[in-house]
Image 1 (spheres, rainbow, N blue to C red):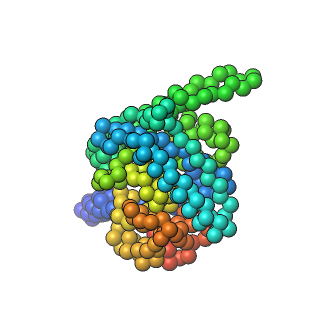
Image 2 (cartoon, helix red, strand yellow):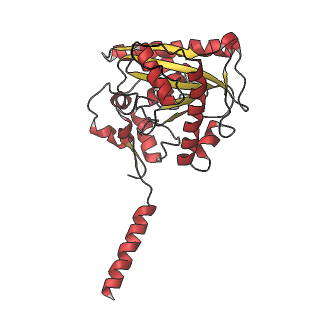
Image 3 (cartoon, rainbow, N blue to C red):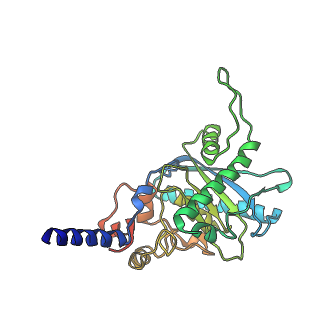
Amino acid sequence: MRSFQRITILLLAMLFLSAMPKKKDFSIGRSNNVCKELTEDVLLYFVFIDTRTTYPWTEFDILSTIDSIQVAKRWLEAQAKASNISLNIKTDYYIGNDFATINRSLPRNTIRESASDPNYKKGVVALSRWGDAVSRIIGSSLYIKEKDGIPRQSKPNTKERVIAHLRDEYNVESVALLFFVNNYFRNDISLAINTRTTKDVEFAIVSYKYPSEIAHSFLQLYGAVDMYKTFERTNSRRIKLAQKYFPNDIMQDPYSINITELEIGAFTKYMIGWENKLESMYTPLLNDGPF
């Protein structure tokens, strides 16, 4: 009888533990995957995508977004210089003749719906496949140089192959791949994908053309973590701590905020490799879930 009771208690304990919310370990995303430390020469490569549910990209939209990207680039490089970090962000983009864009609809009507259908784990997989479909279109337009003694290479057909080509072409260690959809004045989200794994390369889908939004998404690919409520950050106590310690950090909600009013705080500097140590008071921000 006692043996049966012990087994019952053990099973109940296992069920209780399995039902408890698991903490996300954001430190896994630090110096991970293709985009590791944000230093030296890096490439920000961006793509304009039309979907069936977003506004079509006009020439004005594209040019104004490119202007915002340059503002974000200069701000990031200035932040690096102020932190004694050597950083040179090269930028380039895919675009067809006469400002032609890529047509590829999201798995669902919005990024938010795509990421959560039927749940976040499966939604991210679907968006990652969508990213590969976009990359096949990008790859088909790339010029592949022939090299002596090396068999002719096929054109890139996945995100990973496109990034590998761009790393070689621009002689950089890391490529930040940003896919822009035109959600200006619409209610949706931007989302960085595959930042805490090495099974697939990281990339971001960006909804808005604010420089703050662009810099925010760019930094996520290098390990920076949201400080407000998102799919990744959900624990209210940790969110309140982030607001207390870093109210003006770029990783707070960047929507429509003037980038000159923001900064890269100590926690974000640690996550992107600009600092080697993190003060103990900030360590709760390395996780999500119950304390």
